[in-house]
Amino acid sequence: MSRFFLTQLSRLTRVSKQPSLAYHGCRFSTSSRRPLMSTAGFTETQLTVREAVSQVCAKFPNTYWQERDQNEQDPQEFHAALAKDGWLGIALPESLGGAGLGISEATMMMQTIAESGAGMAGAQSIHANVYATQPLAKFGSTQQLESTIPNIISGKWRVCFGVTEPNAGLDTLRLSTRADKQPDGSYKVTGQKIWITCAQVASKMILLARTTPLEEVKKPSEGLSLFCIDLDRSQPGLEMRRIKKMGGRAVDANEVFFDNYAIPADSLIGVEGQGFKIILHGMNAERCLLAGEALGLGYAALGKATTYARERNVFQRPIGQNQGVAHPLADAYMRLEAAKLATYHAARLYDSSRTDGSIRQDAVGVACNSAKYLAAEAAFAACERAVLTHGGMGYAVEFDVERYFRECLVPRIAPVSREMILNFISEKVLDLPRSY
Ligand SMILES: Cc1cc2nc3c(=O)[nH]c(=O)nc-3n(C[C@H](O)[C@H](O)[C@H](O)COP(=O)(O)OP(=O)(O)OC[C@H]3O[C@@H](n4cnc5c(N)ncnc54)[C@H](O)[C@@H]3O)c2cc1C
Image (cartoon, rainbow, N blue to C red; front, side, top):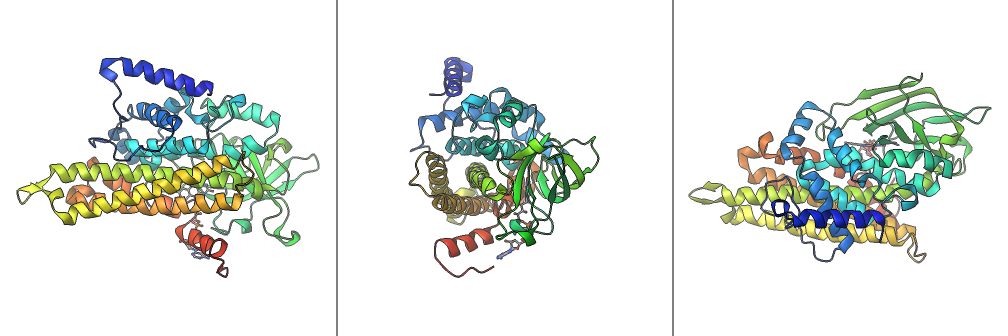
């Protein structure tokens, strides 16, 4: 059992001995009577993560997230609170100061954060610290790991993930940002990234760039390289522009422009030209985390909807007594529970595949993509129905469901859209002709 896990357990035991803080199920900041999700079948470690993280989240009520969303203000206190208790290193090796847990536990953490009322904004404020560091931890050099990971875990450095480009979109292999090697082995980066979450507050970016032109490689997946770079705003050749967006406004999203931006040779992660293979390692983890975040948002919305449906009386009876209100909510619950099974199955496969060679990476990819798809769709159904259950009040900031609804579109779009997952399953599982 890891040292981190033992610390969390003893912290929980201490809390539960204080009568005023007695722990009876997770203490979410949503006003729902109790969390709706069935916790049957989760491991003790996952449940400990859920309990401990929910205690941190309980210090950040819905009003905190409403304000941050309205003012577009970074939730730095929340990030700091999670860092203080060691949560940013949840899936990083103990030898580097991490908790040594897996994506199964990290997914539970992200779900718990979103479910607490923090929504996608809360989750996205730490999201890249968890998944974008996976390829770094696996393929980075000892020197790279020792100089970066402890600062990421402590919360000193925040991380962003730079893949998407305006002219490539989902066709990642056609990205055109270049890292040109200089005679001294360093690189100069030129190009543009878009939608980069937390770039304004990040000290590091995990960057995917082309080191060999597309025309000179046998396959488009070759010639891409992964870097862990400083975002040094005092250096020439780096600019950022914040994008105004629909939801999750507490965290920034940006266009990032590089113009001969110099990065040292030791920014390269792993072998030059192998960046796409390396990044896939982080992408499957990201899909699991996103699935967890979608689930959290869906359960939070459903909790709000059922509370309202019990309490709101129209025609002299609770609106939840009408089957037209109750059945869509019951259906949303079952969709979330089914997506939950797919999500934690995918996370388990991801973790097991590290030690069990019989689990093929393509099976992990199918499971992680399917989970992200199903969880995003289930969350959308729950969030939309939560707004409709609230009637006019569903449109009011105070009731939170409008915020959840705005945010629930993100897992449908990013990091890979619904359509591209359907394309992937059609081709790779159903053996249908590739459509694009
Ligand atoms: C809030 C938010 C945060 C994000 N954070 C990050 C981040 O931190 N780092 C990062 O690198 N990226 C980030 N992204 C980017 C995100 O990953 C992309 O938006 C996503 O991959 C979709 O790419 P695109 O926007 O270029 O869509 P496009 O590629 O332009 O696609 C547009 C639409 O066309 C559809 N489409 C395209 N081709 C096909 C096809 N062959 N078959 C069927 N349908 C197709 C797509 O499914 C989609 O619906 C973020 C995005 C959002 C909205």
